[in-house]
Length: 279
Image: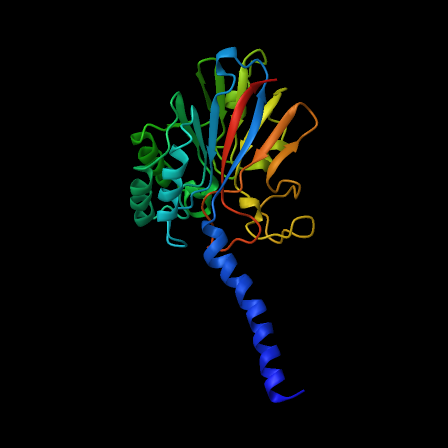
């Protein structure tokens, strides 16, 4: 092999390594996908047929990526004019004063539903070791000041559709039976639960319906059908998308809008648009 041929082949090999790295760092983390799908709900009132429910999850506002991307995403999302908007947790990374100040700026642009806007908390919203409730209170204040109703082991009904919201599985306030003991199967309902591992616990009291989660980010980097190297759940089935739990419950895991770190490969950031239908 001549020196010229060697340099040419070495350069091609180097580029083959550099281009995927640049793509996963500078392209895919900001390549938002709006995922559209139907959401069949038992006992859904007829007047809610065809209404749009938007799920936004895992903003992770902080210093690990340019959170102005979140504001841009909100601007695009408002064009869909949703009827309901649900935020399913992890608004910040650590809950520092700087992050909460940034969160206030971001949520000035929050997407709102014409009928209702609700949220739940994720593990990162409880600060260090997921146990600093003073940070939780400050985050809730920011969100509630932006007219986002936060469900903390509580439920709220809007026009015949009941939203049930859990506090996070890893938090000291995870008490889902506080609300599930009052579960009424004759009502149309949707559960908001940040960590999908909660689906495997005996806390559901016969619930039949959809559970909307986040937390996994879809792994952020994966080769579908081959490997998802980092997945922060015990049940490795819980990656992303719709999962049939085979007991009348259906789970949907949103791939997250923000990032724990600015890297994604074959796992684009997601905002989900559900069209409500009668089951």
